[in-house]
Image (cartoon, rainbow, N blue to C red; front, side, top):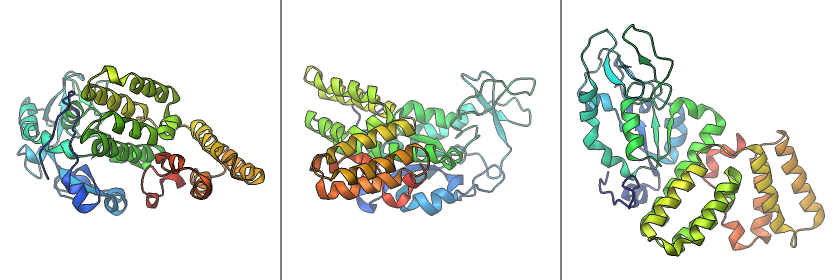
Length: 338
């Protein structure tokens, strides 16, 4: 892994494209080592993810890491848990030992965080006191968990260092909408890093915004308009400041799955580009397919495939280049799930 990271005005934003992607053609993703099948769990075992190993590995180059092993904890080892204040928990052994293990864990990964700057996402092990992304139990002195949940110590450090990087727990990827949204965010993050952050310019920002118009429309039309206004007054800001602000707002806008209603509106907007070139009956047939998608009768891939067929023949370069039509490799089959 090339560890060099160029930092923009917001120090949490990496700006250099990675070399590993160029060599392999795959996007670089972090992965909890146990999910890759490495025997690093507390019991000496693993929790290999078939989704990661059999499907995502065809498109992602995984960088595996176990913060507990990096911190020098043995394998196997006694189980650990978070204790104390859910807003600032500490790590200790489950056995009831009062030994505070927080510094040992954090010292083991702190100096390694920078090497994750060339990643475009991270898949984490759920419920782990180090890697759990959410809903991790924090225990009180009486042995009972607080009602309020927390985040694993490594996951929190990763989020603090790279707040815009797509992070997700492997277990949540078995929900079709969360899975699709994570992959979409990974590719969008990668595209922005390599197409804009590598050498920021107003022209590159506008080109990126234009290509993601309908992705933004499907997720948040208000955010799309807001980002357009931000670029409209861009000449008044330093390019690095503008780039950082745009990136933050863009990733926030696509942070949640798009609704079926918004997808339907977006598909109909795209259909409008065929108004003058495709016969009325054909357009009505496409509109009927879009309606069936909205009703839940057909998956998203059906109207998308129809639209792409006609746009390849009659659409302009502008509409054919919209990333909404192909936000990630078709072979992932994600539009079949929506």
